[in-house]
Image (cartoon, rainbow, N blue to C red; front, side):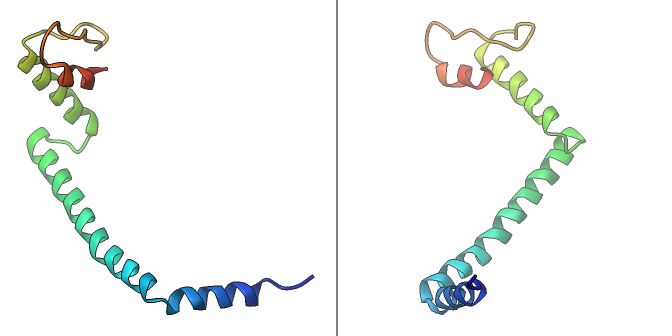
Length: 95
């Protein structure tokens, strides 16, 4: 059986030599730290606002805020009906 290692090595060398792959790697090297830093800031903001990094507390607060803005009380079980007019976009978030 023929070894696939030289073939794979040759294809990897071809990929590395292309400028397009270098550009993609540089873009990824720039974008990944930015997203990581943004996620860290979001976690710190949640810690400051809710006193915890638990995502459930954040979602509960969003539900309460949306419910107040719609002027309705949440039903037991968390399901909401679609209002007769307006505010349909926010009601979708409850589903």
